Amino acid sequence: MKKKSIVIIVGLAVLVGAGAWLAGRDKQADAGERQGAAGEQSGKSDAKGGAQPPAIVNVVSPQRQDVPVVLQANASVTPVSTVDLHPQTTSTIRKVHIKEGQFVKAGELMFSLDDRSERANIDKARAQMARDAASAADLERQYKRSEELFAQKFIAQSAVDTLKSQLDSARALVGAGQAALQAEQVNASYSAIRAPMAGRVGAINVFPGSLVQLATSLTTITQLDPINIAFNVPESALGDLLAAQKNGAVMVDALAGPQAKALSGKLSFIDNAVDPLAGSIKVKALFDNKDASLWPGQYVSARVTVQTIKNAVVIPQAAIISNTRGTFVYVVDADHSAKQMPVVRLHAFGVNAAVSGLNGDEKVITEGKQNLRPGGKVRLADASAPKSDAKTAVAAQ
Image 1 (cartoon, rainbow, N blue to C red):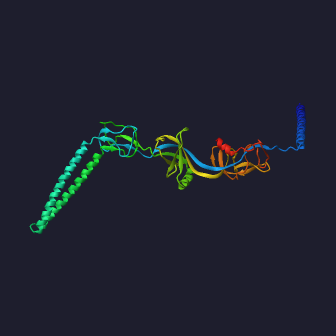
Image 2 (tube, one colour; image 1 turned 135 degrees about the horizontal axis):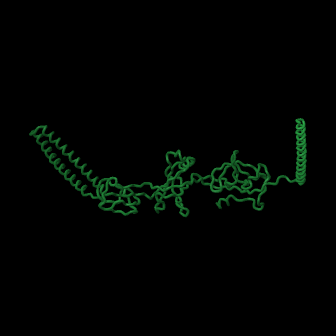
Image 3 (tube, one colour; image 1 turned 180 degrees about the vertical axis):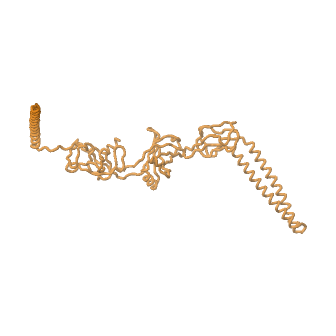
């Protein structure tokens, strides 16, 4: 019984193997037929003499022009100086001479404090000084008479010396009285609060009759002309900024809004340290602001021209290719083939870039680059107008 089972199993295995062999032979035959058909089609194509068709591309002619290297940043308007006015004595406000928002000149009277006590102290100091001066004058007369008496040998030298000492002491008292009078005059001057500089007055926090102390804020004065704008630039631009500053004044443009007129100022300050967290450095520019078009705290857009690349070769940025081997462009060679030209991007602005590595008379490929290989044949997309001027691209920017 076991022998019959073994025979049946062996027979089934033989049948399965034979079926697999026949199926494999049929597949090989089909593959051979397909390869033959493909070979016939290829032969027909070769018989017609047709190689791979040229790639269709668009080209531009590089332009030569001066390219300004401009840094753009968001900036805020900051005053050159601002002062928070406080009284230097405890008193009451007698009169307010200014209004909120008023422009004041340096030295203009702004607040008057109650100064009756100070004026009384000045009178007292003057009286004390007059009394000391009278005593000194009397001692001086006595000293002169004693010298005459001593010359006639009516008094001893010790009496003369005593009067001389008393006279010196009286003169010292007169000097002390004079200093005390000046001190009282200084204290009295605190009752008249004047503008320390020209500027615009802010909100006024006191009124006539208000009690003021050292910590009381009366108002603020902010200088508006000239005025600063402050902004940060990347630390990579520090070298260009310092080099430009050595060559002369660095111009800075400020734009307060899309419809606003650009204002021109000069770079006035570069901070002495780079912010290690942000990787930037703070700079300031000084602007004339006679018409008060810039206001403290206002946000503006700042543009700094750090240098100008003279007679630079300008091409569209779309033509530049970057990969692991470097940066290059494709140009159309004399035999209508694609040629790689290595370039260095000097400065990018808008859709264009100033580059080095080109002579300026090449035909640079801008579209169709994805189908190109070095040495591959190319055909211009529009034979009647093969060039798309880079200058047009700049104008359309």
